[in-house]
Image 1: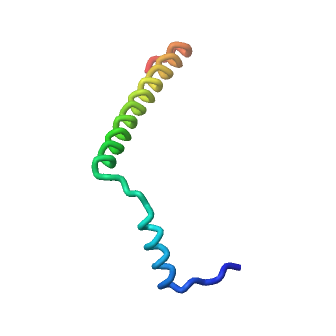
Image 2: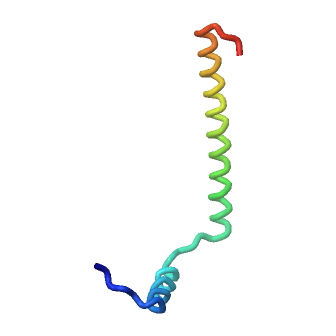
Image 3: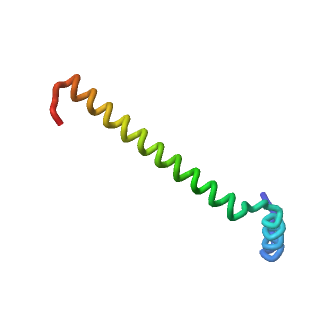
Length: 66
């Protein structure tokens, strides 16, 4: 069973650990955000094209007009 920590001590420990974190700069954050948005757009276009292709192939095989 873990021993209980004093809330004040806990907050001191949290503050000490937070100060050890290397936070990204504003520029790094903007670049990462832009990269994520570009990858999301590419993924959306890929899955849209794949869905259209699969739908077309299924309609061709089953001879169903959509």
